Length: 112
Image (cartoon, rainbow, N blue to C red; front, side, top):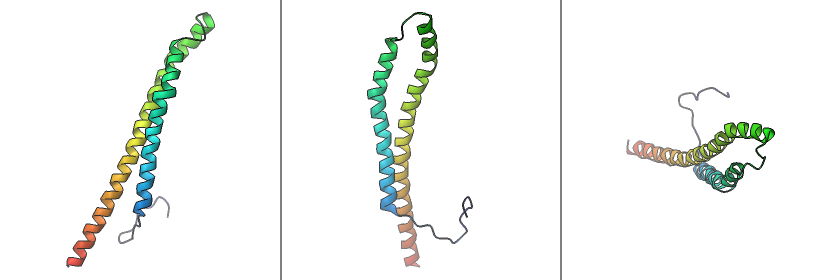
């Protein structure tokens, strides 16, 4: 049943190569997000600093809102990239740990 904990004695199957590839893809996606933030994100940051909307009353009003939200958006973008990359890397480690734990358990069972 969805949302229910596995019952004791139930088997968990892991397609380790597939899970490892998924983790690697996720880590790569985080790296790509970071690359985009450093590229186009930096260009957006520089364009905003140039205040292309002018300094009249409408431009000043826009600038006020821009100064409030743009830095948050750019910081969130960088943070998201880091978190996605980290999640992918940790998924790979989890797969390796699960495979090693399973192998160690199997060795112990054959020694009995």
